[in-house]
Length: 112
Length: 110
Image (cartoon, rainbow over all chains, first blue to last red; front, side, top):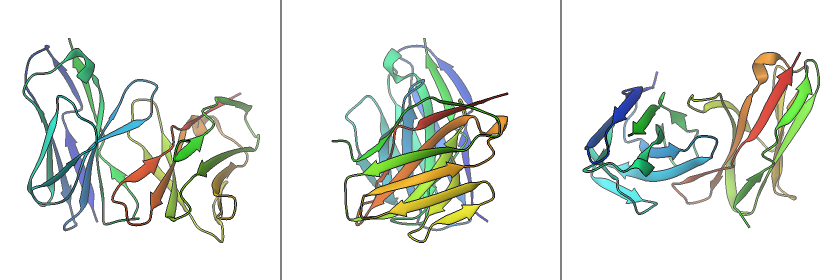
């Protein structure tokens, strides 16, 4: 069966520090991968998605970047965090267009 | 007009009540539909898919109305544990991006 792993669960970082969040999927090949951010009490905001190794599409211009160095690995990064980067970050995968989406357990990021 | 719209609520109902949520979508080329449940500070979890013929899973029933472009979720005999935010997701044909509604908050009280 397929599983998705996302870590860490919580992270407290100072402003200006770098960020790296990692997500891996097991039990499937060539998944569509997604990074979302959710501010408290708000809806999901799509940040990046990837349909293949090295293919990244950005939905919102921002202080973040994403990479997909391997088929089932998706990384969210920042060189210098801003206060506004605080939020709940979710990685997700699905088998293809129109399929169900499955989420990792999320990372609560606080930038202080 | 937003692509997918939901009444944010909150819907405040007593235990045992029946409650229904609707979700409207604007793109008639939409092909697949889902309901997710999200608890506070947790990831969204798939509740059920939505089919044209309607589908039922225990106390939960989902329906799709293509003519009027909405999906619905009916919860019967509400439990305290049903308190959560319910998100609808619509997949537009040919798009890699699933479209989420903002979610409907449900509070079930004793």
